[in-house]
Image (cartoon, rainbow, N blue to C red; front, top):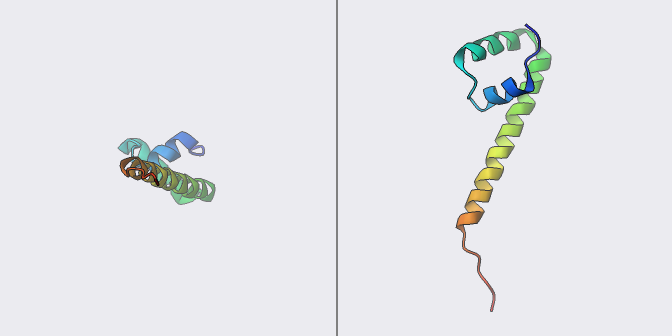
Length: 68
């Protein structure tokens, strides 16, 4: 198997890669430290994006006060 694409790594990190592809990816990760490192980076990216989206959603719900 060639190295895993960034797209597939991101889908895997978001838990949206279909099962057959996930199984192949997981097998590849067992033998490829470069792809494991790239998956770690993708996991960190997905976590950061989720945190940013949550913060934005929370900020949108909080009414802004005016001083006056």
